[in-house]
Image 1: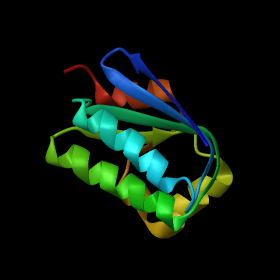
Image 2: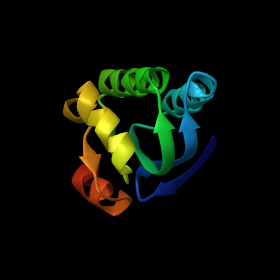
Image 3: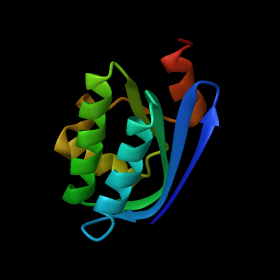
Image 4: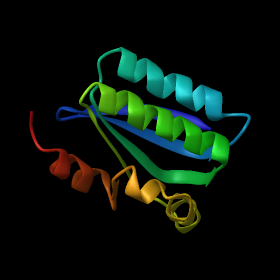
Length: 113
């Protein structure tokens, strides 16, 4: 798994590549938690390069969504491949975390502070 992040306007964009499974979920969760703890309140996860996500990975997404909600932050994902989109849909995460087609769409929906 590879995690890259950058700032676009007032939003932290985190690009995730590879797999989020039992062996990588904690690393992913720690990276996202560190960003939230550092004060990032607007996160978009670009999952175009994510090939696989397990239930352990989904738990980390839920924890991030809850942490941002508690801080009145905003959280979204984008660029889901068919398999990852299917996992989000089947698990009901599509009703918890906003899903957008691309980073630009997610940032536009977030708007300005």
